Structure formats: C-alpha cells, structure tokens
Length: 335
Image 1 (spheres, helix red, strand yellow):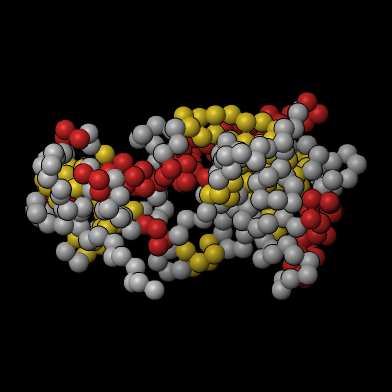
Image 2: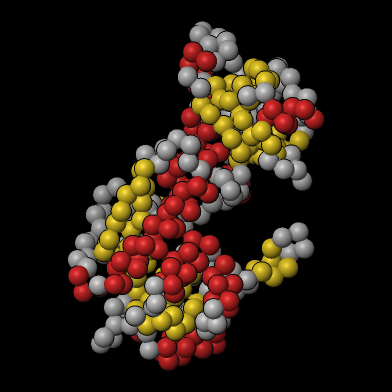
C-alpha cells in the first residue's frame, strides 16, 4: 500500500522500519524538526528521520500543520506534499503534532483508508502523550496496543485492532516501550494487509484516563508516599526523566527499587519511622523508610555525571550510613 508515515521517536521508527520491510511504498515521511540534544546541544534528527534518510525516503519536517498559524507557509508546503504523494492511507505513530481537519479530509477521498494510529495503551484507558509511563505509575497490571482510525479528537477514534500485554512488577517504561513498539508495528502491518476486513468499534466513554506528558518536575521522589508507589515511579520514569532524590546535598538518580513486605522492614510495628530515613546500608541495597509505615530497598543509584551503579558498587566509593535521611518534599506555602 502507498503510505504517508508521520512519527518522530524510536517507537515510531520501529513501525516505519517494519512497514518498509513488509513492502509498503512509503511515499512521504513527516517528522518533527531537528532538536538540540546532548552535551553540546547540537541539532539532532529524530529516529524516524534517520531511518528515512538511510532508505532514501522523502522527508518533511513542518513546525506546525495549521494552515492559519504562525508557520502557515510550512503547513501549506506540507499540504502540497501530502496531496502529491497520492497515498492510500496515513500511518501516525507518536508524531507530536495534532493533525488538523484538513489532513483527515485529504486522506478520506475515494480509494483511501484515512489515517491510522498506533497507540500504546488499551484505549480508552490512557489517552494522551505518555500512556506507558502512566500505566506503570498507576499500578496497572496490563497494557497493550490499539490500532485506531483517527478522528478530530485526542485518541478518541474508532478502534480497529487491540492486543493486551501483562505488566510485570519488574517492567520499566524502557522495557515495555520496546515490547509495545514491536507489537504495534506487527498489528499495524496486520491492519494494512486487509483493511476491508477491519471492524471499527466505538470507544467507551467509561474508564477514560488522560496520560499527561511527563514533566521533569515530577521526578523528585516524595518519601511520604508508600514504598509501592515509589517503586512504581522509579520504573515508570526509567529511562526518562529518572526518579531522583537528595542525600547530603547531592542529587541522586534512583534506577532500581523494590517495595518490601511489612515483615522485612526494620523497626516495623508500632514505631513510626521518618519517611526517607535510611535503615540499613548493605550490598544488596539501601533499606529506606517510606510513607504509611512501608519500606523500600534501593538497588541502583547514579551520581551526577556518573554511571548507573548497583548499590554494592556504589558503596565501594561512597559511604552511606544508617541514620542518614533522604530529603523529603517540602509542603507548599499556604496561600
């Protein structure tokens, strides 16, 4: 099938590579403009653009697709490219720009199948930008991929295919990302292989959640939360932005943590331990008091400019003693 593909990050690159390998004719690739990245903050192409250039695919990088906006010239040039592409469908995967109505209309002509989207959640749960992160953070036991026919709403279109995947208590966003990217690519190829057989299902308005974009300000661990909540946050924020905390004036990234059973916590019982207090410092991890009388074992840490280290390795060069305390979040000032 002749396609327009719109996507930006690695999750989208996996789908593009799969569709290209399956023999689809990728007439045009849309992706976000190059962004500054790395220590030198040099402009870097997206993962999708890199693949497109490596395979001699036509690429466009409009800042916006709004024909009446600040970048109307770019949008109009892109509109011409999409029209000239003569594609039978558009596949959209984590593109990062909202598709205006004119895009949907352009792909809805005779002989066309419209705009398809690969979404990394079991819609209608977790509509929005960060469904993998939010599913882990919320303690969901399963996730999956939904192939959706796009409409003017935000992840509200009819569902075409859906497949579930369990979330294990050791899964991070990084691990689930790779598994869901592969699943999404396979389901999208399946949908395009026989689109006439697809049976659209309207999404329920029950159980809708919005997966807000991840903000770096969320990275700081709140030790007043339970150990289970903190452990989920550590997994949800791996690889970005990384859960963080402060000890003796230094910010540390926490890359591995396990909530412990009540009987494993030192000082459990009627004693209320201060959240953030380090109870034990041993090679298998730092035992830390959390909220609601729970305890957490931190297994991997990273100093600024350093590498991720197992606590056993971290302790060889950095002393951490029981009785020290991680900083807790300060309560907001009264209004």
